[in-house]
Image (cartoon, rainbow, N blue to C red; front, side, top):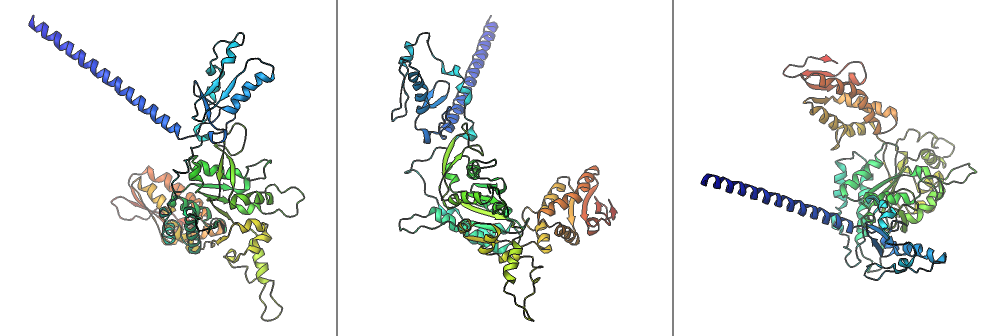
Length: 509
């Protein structure tokens, strides 16, 4: 009898412990759900409310009315909807009142007198399905008193910026020095106050250089090292407002997206407009120049600093996309372009003063000069098709040197993320060592020079020659080392294959 009693007590204890564990698990789930809900609510509190009707943010439309089901409507849209009743002669009055505390003051008492109208369920109207996606929400601006002053100590000194760029970019010493100083001065300007009445002007830059010389790569590396928002736009797609193509505001919209829709962070970012030479004035045309001089004219105010109305989460303005205002005063603009045919304009200027006689300069004196773009002046760019007002807002003119064979060899192996290091890492994952002879690197650089596309040709050439190696090496686990030779690059031989634990055999693939 006592044994049965003890067994029953043990079962009751087990059941009690099991019940307590379940209760604890349920409590933990409730706590985790509550924490997740609170985190989501705090995340939503960081963003402005957006009207589901007119798609205006709270900073534009004022206080919002939050309906059951998460529906958010601004007072203007709500009042317009109810004014329709009055315009159509409806005797049922409806008033919207938004007090200063933001609590809803919606008087729907008049609707209760309408015949056949009972309880209105707003969730049934389908407005809840129009929830604004997160990439179209704008982060709330901080109160002016709480707005922290930009700490320029975060931005390193020019020599430190250049030292960081040296790890990724080979050569272009003058360009790296000019960019480092311009960026440092720009962020000193952002962090300065104008209490003494001295206002520092912007240091927007114009980069000139042949294709593949590293213009875009320089700006990308700079933004990554400084940890500031960067937007890269292509000027070829920009057109005057009202025509097919991207509006000028789409450039700032990309920067806002890169800053996580944080307007204050975007207003301290960098915008790089590539292929800027494509918006030069068109010559010998009778049609409207909607993608040339007109784009330059519309960029003027943005480069200098102005309030720009930009779409959030989209490249074009439409009624279904929220809009916000971005001040471009503290945004650093960097424009870059290859400017083909500019060299001919420079040659014409350099040789126009030549005279007839034994001491006269030859007309073809500058034909073989590779870095002729370094001699470019404002007048040359104006003749190319850039308007003076546009050039005046790009005070820093930086020319990049054309890449020689020696530069290309260094680009292959010296940078921190050099192309050769990438392939070495790929084969290292297969436990195979990859080596390149110096003569092979010279052969690759020579082939790249023939393509006239700068450093971009290096990747294309290596992809061609590494394709068979990357395909064949994983077949044989005994291969321990592969050496790329000049003969393999010139297609007169093959790479040298070394097997594991065996002396070099000189076997050609």
